[in-house]
Length: 115
Length: 112
Image (cartoon, rainbow over all chains, first blue to last red; front, side):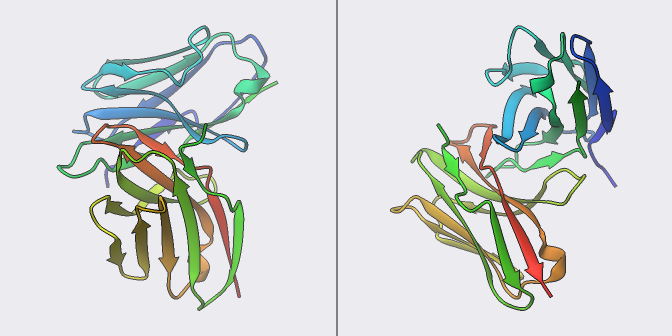
């Protein structure tokens, strides 16, 4: 049963600390997305990769957020330094473009609380 | 500037009746529309999609209708079941891009 995995599932940290969230996409998928869900904004796209290359990170605050794919089985999202306004659920999704549309498979999310 | 809008934050429907979730969009370059369903503490899961060249797509109890002239789509669930209680996200893909733009979601409550 192929699925996207994310670690940790929950993270509580103090303002100013570094936070690293990890994602293992479904084997064979060539696109990976990072989303943030908040009550106010809903699901916002932060960044995405195709074949491990970053294609769009326009949704990310550049000064504190960074996203990478060290290899095809791991995507990371880092926040340094973290701020209370970063508290949200962060989702990773992976997909493989089907001829007509791109269905994305989401992980269970990382719930981040910054105190 | 929200390109995909779900104006109803929540909706309550009696079990067995029809649930209708609405979604409006502003960008005429969207070529695919999707609905995702989300349970608490889980990631969204794909439910149904429709190409911009069609006006209806049906999958079991779920039907999506697209009105391009009004830039409006709706998801119909008939009959509604308790397991349908979830948050439903409307999403749209921009002209064969990989990116999908999501609405803020509508929480559906199915009442016994």
